[in-house]
Image (cartoon, rainbow, N blue to C red; front, side, top):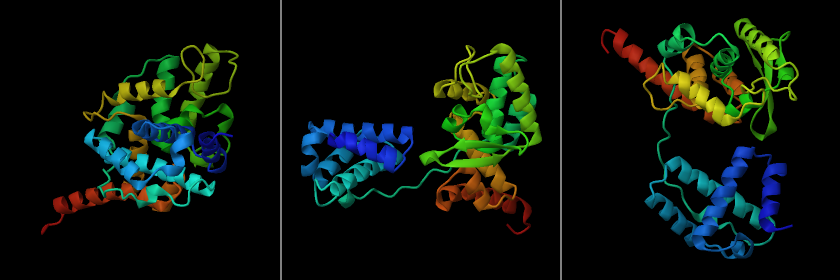
Length: 294
């Protein structure tokens, strides 16, 4: 088996990376070897830290974001770690390349008033697409699930008796998320509309297009962008903004950090702790406004 194909098999089946991560790693590694004008099958064993630094300098000169810079180096580290494991080379050249430190931006989220405008005052059409669009937004905000998790949600994943949904997250990890009676009512209503529109679809996905086919990521992004654009002046109107909003609002209202971690499907508490910065900023603001000597 070709070396790069073995690597893809390794991160897919052994490391169980998501399809999105696999695509990103593939693009990053191929871009690196294209920059060198070499083929990864023949050149992998002779790569040096200098080769990697030259590529990263080129990326920095093209104003790549610090987050993307870090991700691309991570792709190379994973690849060359595999190469070392295969005995093709003795040391990982990417381990000798240091990523510049940078301040992670705080997650961008909607204010409570904007969420109220979204669900209480915005008008959704009283038809299948209107019911679908509102449920997409409600599910994102009420559960904090990811775009891929929502797109792949199936009818069997909704448990009305236990009042929960089951989703498959990163690295194929399944988690159960509690949902409210109100949200379950919206799901029932939408599924009735779905059944009337498409009597016998050839799949069991919850969310479908106007033609009855499973929704795709770009459609969900358009739906979210369409409605969020009407309630916020922020330029960032992507599905992940609702996930950020879910986590921030939960913590602002006293939710336990570990509980939010489990709901979001984070593998470590550090990934969830970033939302406490937003909570802390709110506390500082309240203190300054309320304390007589602030």
